[in-house]
Image (cartoon, rainbow, N blue to C red; front, side, top):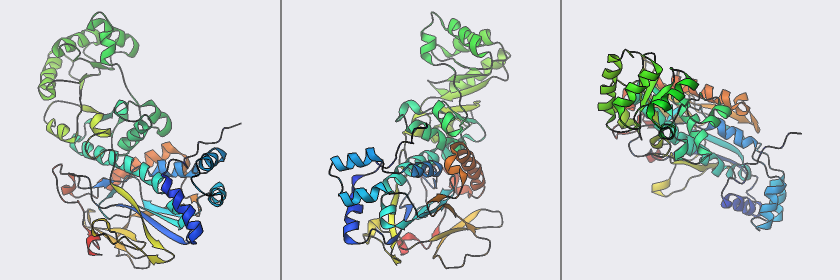
Length: 436
């Protein structure tokens, strides 16, 4: 007998359930409501955001139910009333969700996810939605910038040891969506189909009496085509020993410390002198997109990125919020100038120039006609509580589809979007959030 899936219902904040409890008493629990996910501003230095985590969210939504264990916890803690417990026991999301496709770019004010249903069933999803989308979208934006800086060079993700154990696979997935080639995280391979790879670390070399013995053991197991770590002691000596062990057909070597630019140039000359002309050079060591851009002129073939992807600037949050925009057919918004938003349900489109580059993002009322040729950004994800696509139950497929779509979306970016220096959001949005 298959065990039931673990519930995601308590991956939430208590006030979500308190609002349901109060809404049942006040009479608003069953009013039709619409919430939107958007960001007010991008993290410092960013010119765009990238939607990521949608596939994970849909899977988590399918497991959002209150079983006996969850209800017992709520009852024992006196968190909600018995009436609310009875309502939660029957909970199954029956509303609609539409949103930007995973891998799409967004700017402040873009309604990247729209959740519609009763007030009670939509308000309770806030924490689940934001915890997944904020984390994955932050990683995706960082990964997209790193991919832009790296050009065609290989990008490997290796940040699992610098983040929460469950955040590791999620980060690897988001990075893969945005163009990384592989990850060191095996769970990301199992869950999401992300290609995995890895050879040895410094500890393995230090465990042997000498560097050559360690490299010989690696070659005996993995063959000459694997990647050899050469900076445990002296880089030049490490390169010499690696070529002696693996031969001139050695696959790759990795440099993880020191002056990477100088080391890469010196190692390339040394490899060529030793006849290892096809051996690739991989650089690592707390690299971010600015470091990668600065290394563009050195003879490197790829980068292993970890800390700065999963815990660097802009991670692990994208600043996304989940706000009520319509209740019982009435547009609503908070009136605080610093934290306001455009009320009412919106349809989002982008206008493209003759070259296919996006020039402006349009937010229209549901009944307003879209301009001819405008790109519709929102797609149905859930209708009447049922996922509209099988990717909701196929994590590997959702990951690959998001990766492929991200490539399409890249072609619509203007050149100014790729700047790594601080600048304005890549795309204007009309009507502007500040004007409403």
